[in-house]
Length: 175
Image (cartoon, rainbow, N blue to C red):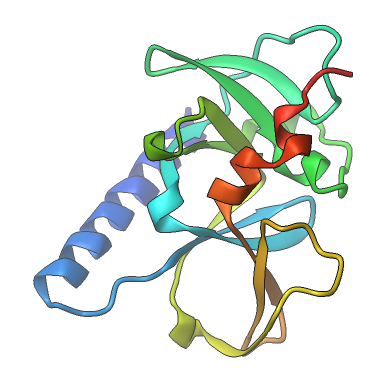
């Protein structure tokens, strides 16, 4: 219950900050910063949808381990993908860790009913929050964007959610 209240408070603050930025004609942050599997990711706000507290899923047999199952999110049957598992950084999660996780629905404009399981929301970020960036490494998946480094030396990988939602690995959930 406390997690839901904290999530509602976070969403409320996020909405207030976005509205204040629009009102002041200030450049709006470009990304939602999240952590999953011990790594940091930047997800484009325009491709991100609503954030839901973890409520469990209904398992689907004969699927990839990173496809956790389906959940009813506001009346829509949505496939839930473990972002860390999909990207190959699966770490076992205790029930308590799952209860502290969130599901980030992909924006409806991407035309895919999917949500990503993320371990932690880290707020909004804009390019000004980083001290350097570099292009994706050779051989990186096509949905990897630039990698950004913040002033504490943490590396944040940008993910193009539209490209991810069209990628063959994401679309091939059968085991």
